[in-house]
Length: 200
Image (tube, rainbow, N blue to C red):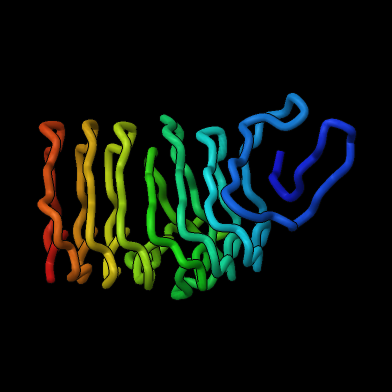
């Protein structure tokens, strides 16, 4: 099932008019929600927070483009990886949070970025890299790796909190995020930190 609309118990449908803090349900009318379609929340300028359930394994291109009031994001805990899908152009970075005002991000699961054609995304094309307003990122216990360049060049990032379970921080993961002010406490589970992971 794809989240394009909200289906109410009386069978009526609301499309695109999402406001305030929203929790996407894991089930709608007895059917598991597994994907967020391309452009689902595009230009929802009154959306201030969103929680994506662990049942969602795909998020389409531009799903949150233009959400200018979106400050809080939660990727709920899950053993399943979440795949952010972008357009096919090899050097176009993700547009998921373009123009969004994200400040607080909770990451409760592994995620990766790929193009619609199945090709892997490029480093620093990750959904969060180069974002212009994220201040805080908290990782949950289900996160075992942080991808190459995943949170690089976020000049507003001040706080990062790692939880138990993290094994790998890949190269360049936080490169250029030069406003990190809080101490970094690494869990005992951490086995590898790639080169330039915290460069700059």
